[in-house]
Length: 114
Image: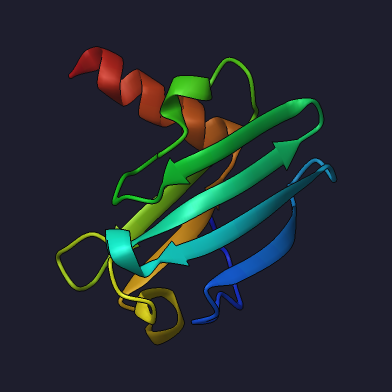
C-alpha cells in the first residue's frame, strides 16, 4: 500500500501514479463544496476510464473493478468521517493509498471468507 503524496487543498488537481509494475494511472481529484465531498473526477489506466466517483472511506473503493484493473485505491480517515472538507487530504485528516494486485486479492479473499 503506497500513500498518494502531495494531495493539496486545491479543488482540482491531477496526478500521475506509477504502479509497482511500471505502468501509470492518471487521477484527477476534485472537491465539490455543494456536495461536501471529494471525487475521482477521472481515473485513466490504459483503456479503463472511470469518471465521477465519490471518494469514501474504504479498504478498496475500486473493489467492483478488481477484474478490470490490477490495483485498488483505499481511503482511510483519522477524523472518523468521510473526507468532506476541502483540506481533509492536505491536513492528513484523510489519506488515499494505491493498493497492489496482491493487496486487492487479499481484500477480495477476506470478503469471500467473511
